[in-house]
Length: 419
Ligand code: PLP
Image (cartoon, rainbow, N blue to C red):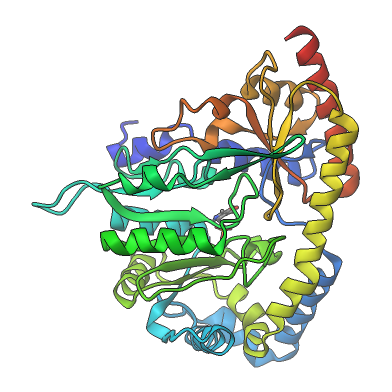
């Protein structure tokens, strides 16, 4: 069969395909210890909320019939959009209007549309511009989204040793200042894969840079404030009328409903709504129906702050303790400061094998992690950390994570002994 360039683009192997295959198979009852994907944890209090909401929808026959029977507008469910606009105005004082909002089939598809609408093949007479990722390593799921080559310009991080076996990445603002082909600047906050949380000051400097270039700052809030708020240091969400904030219901515990929320300047939100209609007419509306009252009442904020955040913070602290226990004095391992998200980002310098080889060895032992090179792209594939780091997820059950760390410790020692 002959494929078009567009078809070839999707046929080619990609890190995110491999990751999601691993994840789907492991979660479908395989025997693997899943320390690889970004699946949210089963948090009993949150599962009770979702069950309650589904029951309420079913009990109110008209509500479930309305939800299942109709296509929503391509922008999203209008009642949900109004509720969201009121939520952002009420809780944050942001002057958000309904036409600043659009629902997408997960945040993942929002990023595909945003990146390719803003960067890539230029309109006639215009220069080629790129999506600037100022703090590599950055989310694996962006890496293969460009329909044209070289869509991303990734910037190497500044690396700071923060304590025994701890380090932290920072934005290199000098390097950013020299960039002159930005179509947009994009950061995940907290960062997937490292668990870094950009400070408010860093975000305002990114915003100042974006404003100086007349381009949007896109902030990916998949794990961030105000929901699901999986961040362990204070960091306020920031909105500027020219910026774009992308949210998702996934990490609240609802990845199955595939619902993303984009807050953007009205022309961009409108283009995304058209894109929705061209690609899939309308979005899944079940997730919107499930969460709408929680946004109307503000309960989503208390659940995020009082249930979700402490749960994941506890998981991260416990995983760090197991790292100390099982990796112990095995070589020069270090781990990025854990400030949010579901992951720990380990660096194993001088291990004698690459992170990819470590991934393979762990997989043979029934443990899935993600090798670091997938998170270095946009010109950063050669960064020394790309082959020294792995991302380890700590959201699964404590038994799974503990056993995974025990085996990781064994493999690190084995590699250190024999390479
Ligand atoms: N952005 C980041 C940083 C993520 O980690 C993920 C999913 O893991 C997404 C976006 C996509 O989320 P969704 O499930 O809404 O497509």
